[in-house]
Length: 253
Image (spheres, one colour):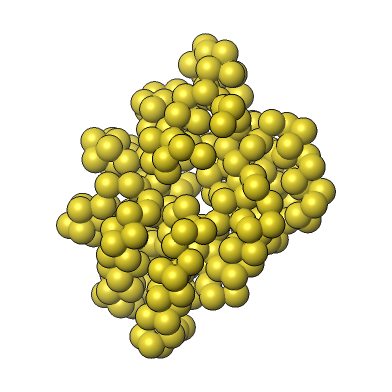
């Protein structure tokens, strides 16, 4: 496949699919990784992936959503993911969230452990949410021996970002890099061979004056532009390296 721009993390079922696809294609975005967060969005992600060649299916379980589910329902969902493994490129969005949950940390770790063990069994990457649970998430991933890890929109301390890099994992530069000094530092200083770009569409629009949920994969180019500008690189060279990163983690596409 010819190198293209990649949106490694979005929620494409919440975007106007056909129009957004057309704009992404026009912008040169050839890979869109859409994330599942519960049984319904996992099904939606699967359908989108089967319908559109550029859309890659990720199936996962949002940590706060998981707290509302029974063990048997979580297990059934994970069995369903395993059954669709040939159509799934990664388990995402998965992880832990201590901002919205101050009392069930042990339960979150138990559920996340199940998810990561399935990813290891299937040899699939994990695309990880770690809001206010950055250290605990990293420690658990290390304990479980996870190798193919992409930390989505990671907002932890710089020393934890360095620990992620030391583990051979990946960080993302989201489109909100336009207003985040932390993500600008990622874009400038971290190894490009361990970076991806994401929109988290329809969230994190690059224009902070846009209040509606209207971000979309085409806007991922803003993250690439920031990386290229801050590093003094050609845009196509950034694109080509991120594409190589994708092939390293996900295999040839």
